[in-house]
Image (cartoon, rainbow, N blue to C red):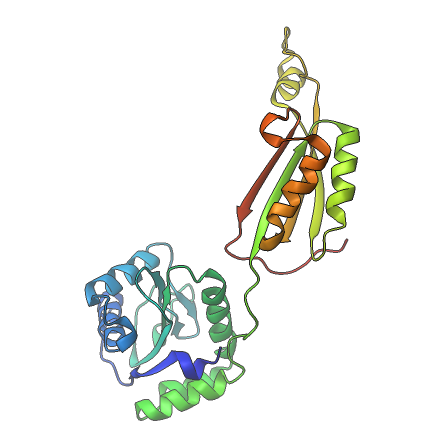
Length: 269
């Protein structure tokens, strides 16, 4: 995915005179609304989404730059725009500097991985102070657009985003634990880690010296945590149930599987 496809010409403007954050967000919402991609989304809804994101923490990251962004229902494609404020605007930046360059992103609601990669690509491209200064001083929108695209020419990775799930397998029997660990470790492209803990009753007994604990209170639990390709979820359940029988009737083993919005990096095996 290239930023040439996402940066909308109609959403690039130079020389804004906004003098506070609220006005800046209003102008961004109005500018974004000019894009046909957002024709079914109201300007008010765009502004509300941008404001809601700002309540979580400022999108200014210092050096005179901010990247206001949001993800919205009803949006089918990404919209990236640019706005320069030559005199600067207060944006609650940690370095207390005014913001002179705003890059905004409006994304589809269910676009977590691409949204994060887009933010990362843009923030990395804007590390060069001289390039940012050229953008801020751009005399017209065409020049600003060209400078931005040149700085981000590597684009957002076109690699299909990895769709992964997070798996927890809790086991309270050492023999069963080893069997499950062995069968899951043979799955391709899977990262496994093992953690050990105690049952609630066992922990309470150790810390409060309680008596009359229920059966199994001294049970030690082991947890296998795996990050797997989403397509392998059913295979994980099949392999575990080949050892334990139906998980719906099993005591001493529990499996949970969650969809991951984002995963990155790797661990040594």
